[in-house]
Image 1 (cartoon, one colour):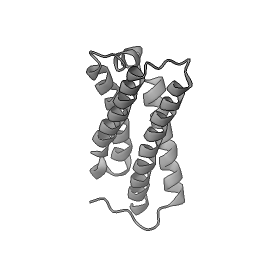
Image 2 (image 1 turned 135 degrees about the horizontal axis):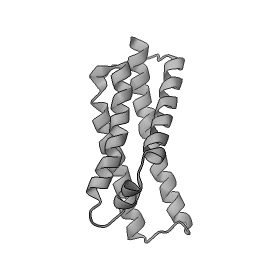
Image 3 (image 1 turned 180 degrees about the vertical axis):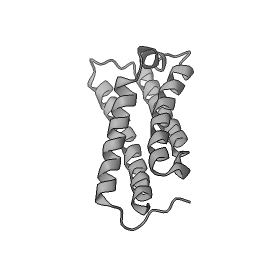
Length: 135
């Protein structure tokens, strides 16, 4: 069980949030290849590119927990699964509605996608900060 104390260091929570924002920027933008971007959106052959993209998110999350609390490194797998699920659902909705970047609904959906990723990171940040505060 993960123990979340009643009080968490403000410095730890701020550092964890910044770390997860940086992780997200790296994995979703700087390190995401064209193969991942295009491949995960395809009706067929989407699994490997999506798995690679989500796996990158999971690996970076695992690295953060490895530094602060190695016993929680498994949360990298949780992040990969959650991230992959969110991205897959966005892809399905985009295709089903035939959305393009020229439609406002496309951007609303992208905003929902990014918000869900950031909410995931808020939860992970709390766990990382709690582990860091306890040490």
